[in-house]
Image 1: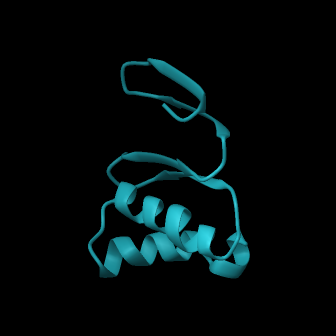
Image 2: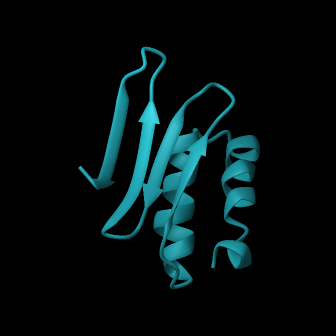
Length: 79
């Protein structure tokens, strides 16, 4: 589904042409477009300003991040 839908391109296009934020674009693509196709999964996305988005439509997704202070955050499930 990720290749069929061109997930990364869709997120990038929404940010460029609709002026969406990274969070808005990843949420729309994963929660709406991917789900409507019957796909499940998620993305770990980072924009040019260092903003991160961890969007998924499953029960959980292993992910981790570290800020500029060296603070590590590791998560599995949605908050």
